[in-house]
Amino acid sequence: MEAQEVYRGRLIDHIQLVVQDLAASQTFYTAIFDALHVPMGGTGDGFFWADELFVSTSNSEAAQGMLTGRHHLAFQARDRAIVDAFYQAALAHGGRDNGAPGERQYHPGYYAAFVLDPDGNNIEAVYHGEANRSTPAVRITF
Image (cartoon, rainbow, N blue to C red; front, side, top):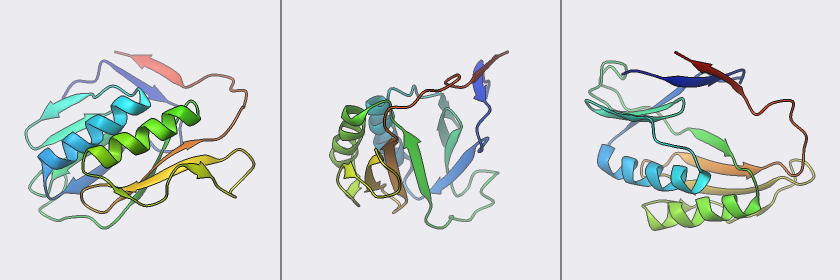
């Protein structure tokens, strides 16, 4: 696995999900990342990745033969339309509704959608509303 470019400066460096059906998960995550405009990173023997999310089977070395529990992952979206596209892509590719797109009460402008992936993980896309960022992320190239 070679990373040519990564982004740093976020709270979480990377996450690994261990899934039962790698092909079903790859179909699901490829569709939602396409909707979110996040490129897939690649594949390896029993795993695939996008940005800092790694998805593998339970027989991968890192998983040590065990499935993990239910997780909640939230991906940032650039606007409300992308949250809507994420939701539709997820439902069309093996996801199940866990909260249709809409405003939430977490803070003003919090617009999100929630779906369950093929393994029951709670996957969210959120647009936090209009905001100014000093930079989208720190880009590191190798």
